[in-house]
Amino acid sequence: MGRVRVLIAPDKFAGTLTAPQAAAAIAAGWRRHDPGALLDLAPLSDGGPGFVEVLHAALGGRLVQVTAHGPLGEPTPGTVLLAPDGTAYVEVAQACGLHLLPPDRRRPMEASSAGVADLLRAALDVGAGRVVVGVGGTASTDGGQPCVEAFGGAGSWPAGIPLAVATDVDAPLLGPNGAAAVFGPQKGADRDQVLDLQVRLAEWAKQSGGDASAEGAGAGGGLGYGLMLLGGTRVPGVQTVVEALRLPQRMEQVDLALTGEGTFDETSLQGKVPRGVAWAAQRAARPCVVLAGRVLVGRREFAAAGIDAAYAVEETAGSVAAALAEPAARLADLAERVARTWTPRSSVR
Image (cartoon, rainbow, N blue to C red):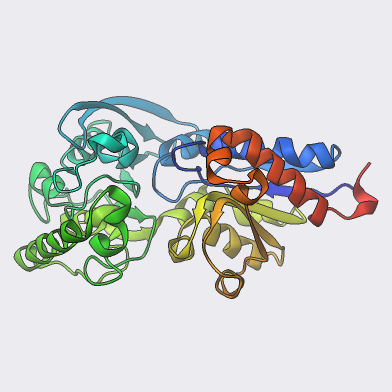
């Protein structure tokens, strides 16, 4: 048998590793067991942090430096990618990302999406013929209201320039599966604050008259809703990146796909990176394996999404604390273990 060919296509491991760092760690661990393997590294993003970095690496183009208002109003550096085809890519997490606030500064009731308007204006200023906005990883749960108002109001996006809203989940704005209920606690909101945020979002939806039930409206703390109200059309974030990186074609050239993220849970199956990789793997009839910091979804659920197996770093490391202390090293250890299981003996030299 010839050398095993593996596509390594993880998302970031939030708070510990960027997607390129995660891909490099997985590759290092795999090579310990199988030095001769042919590894194709394809770090991904679903629209959240890393969206612009991943697309710049894949597409090239020009990075334009921008200063935007951060989640609490402070000046924050950002970048807009102007791709060779004239498309500008924007990452909302650069203006209102949860990663911009340490845990002791998280203010779920105050964090604002207003700075996203700065990024949108910068994308237009560079002469973009089309704008794609990666939506995910925000500190805010404001339905995009501050962004919409700062930009000029509902429907104020210029005609003739398509605006694609690339969301990391397909959640609606309101309800038990919406922006506040599902994602509010991840941003530091307690039970009472989640209820207050739900009331605010419902009032904004009633006032603005948009489609609160639209797929992706709840992404980015409701920024998906706001950007669609502005004049955008929702597209799946991970699909945008998968197509830009030609993942279906690359999948045809490998024997196995590896993907991963910090926490593999139910939201991972709503449109995040593991689901996107599994989709491409299914099309090519290739197995897909998840390596994650934690695995919180059952085998039946992930199998239904086209994922063959899922492994957790915390199990190999012995504890969450040990996994977080040396994330790259522990992820490499897990990859080595997975390689032993998924590499045929006859291919290891």
